[in-house]
Length: 175
Image (cartoon, rainbow, N blue to C red; front, top):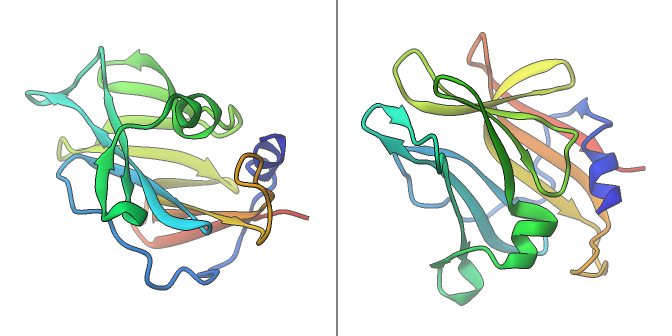
């Protein structure tokens, strides 16, 4: 896991696909924030905002789960190990409809949940000094590495530039 944390520190920008063809896109959701996929299989970890009326649920702001495509695309909760070691979230309310979050795998990349000017929930983060509205994270794992302690080659953050709306793929490569 330390290698993933290190990976999230050293970013540079490169448009790339790293062999991501034919990866499934989770069914659309009005409150979809982002999802995470990795190169070991097509299983996907999904993060949706929970709203109460027009506000983010202050007690339970995120619904996160996995879609197990290797088992016919069934939706399942994260296992306790997945929550604690990688895909779970540490969430803290910092303002009205504003939440600071970190993935369990790394406290180095802050994610901020907020409502945009249209009242839609979004997550922004800063990667390579660029503020990005996040839509997807893809983790490229070295072939043959252990599934319990994967050796990560790179992490790709996909989304749109916070100010211009242009599409971005921000990549962090491992040495």
